[in-house]
Length: 354
Image (cartoon, rainbow, N blue to C red; front, top):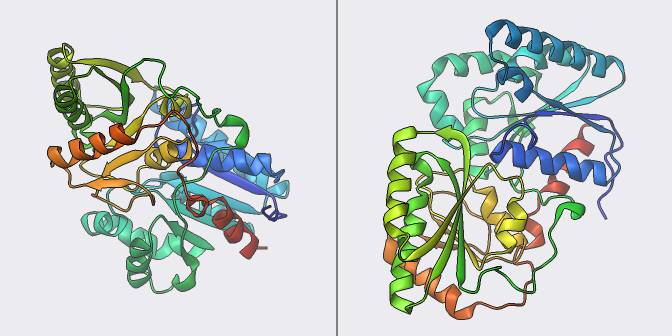
């Protein structure tokens, strides 16, 4: 059992109720686990600011959020944990004030591009960090290589830079029951997840499924789970046109902005993440968690237990799919090593700030 941190925490991020994506999944799971373990935690959802339709409404929502953060500090909240992508606007606006008021500041950066490389291309942020990062008690990255590069860039941070594995298992109450029948359909079922952008490359999974279907002479079902947080219109149309051509060989279903990802993954025989670029791929770990074998490109650090292939090597992907097909079982058990769950890692960082 995890030891409680014992101090009040404000988690400042975006969450599943506003947007489906890597940061929201990560932050929602962390919040739910903290609540499950009876921690004193509140969430502040900054998506409500950026989803406003006019500049005036954005400014009003931003001021309202700032007032709320100040009230939380006055009420006794001690740790303010910001989750952000590279630009981290909310952190820059509010963290320095909370720091001056005695708050302990944590920033987790979820960079799908490489934060150190991004800073080289955006020197203004690098200069800003020379000041803003001095209010940090912890700066958290998802992999040790990134942490090492940032320590070299900002020597004043030193041991305040930490690495915490990006995957947090959801609260027990949200986990689906292991399915006695993997897929509701009788054929081999493949799932893939992405967004309507070329970087996610979901069509590679579908093309490989079509090849496998021809070779095993059986129908295959493919579920393409897409987020609309990224929408490249021409790419979407091109992919949908290709899906229409392949529909005579495959049963293809497209699902947009689903919040039932774990349940969907648990009902498939295999999950494929064919992305051209990635930071980790939380959905890969989620698939393994619910007992679904996972195949992914080797473009980044992946969860232990993932079958890897070089992006673009369709034959290697087909070979992995055939291996899973040959070994598929109706008996489900989690394939995720418990060490991949980073909840305890976050508790450790919180406890260090008591």
